[in-house]
Length: 242
Image 1 (cartoon, one colour):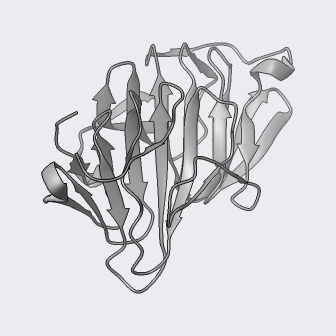
Image 2: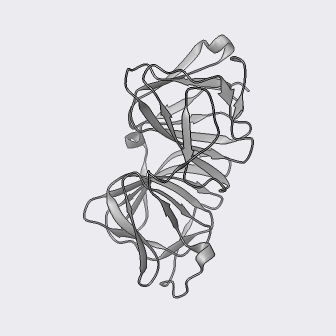
Image 3: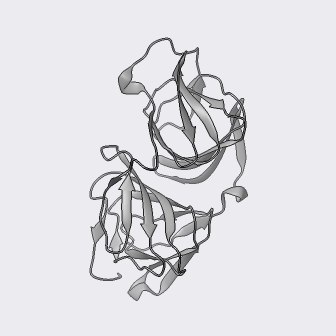
């Protein structure tokens, strides 16, 4: 499939404040998926979204609560999944908490009374950066995921200095990414003649079925966070560029 890779700086996006204590910036909105940057400055009210949240803590520390007296610490590098219609709130930890997340389906927030019941199937799940499992192999890339059975595949992707991944695409998935460090370059297009450079802190979107390969032009390891939204096949390895 043709198309260009889009790259954005989160600081360039408009901010909204859907409720007290929470600022949101939409980085991309494609089909039923939205990549947003959530900034939590203080305790938020109890609230619910109709869609799910698949997030990665970019910076800061705080807590996410799902009922009175039930909360879990989240901090830089953690991954979280909040199932649809889960009543929850964020509790600030003294410094600003920033979460980069894909939100699915209905994006509206509804404020509600505090949750008084505990439904284990509707609790937020938190996975630390040391507890990921391997997934979706491609040459010269290490891909690991916190939630291997989830409908959205979140991955931490690592490439050694000077590495070039094999050519591949991600089927019909909506693909969002974020450069934890870098820069990195993604080659694509006829005979791989196009290239998108992604700097530290930038987010990007790769169109479905776009054949590409990720390269690390530096001599140090590069890490990115990506979200594949849709379903298997997550990765299709191919012989060369389209």
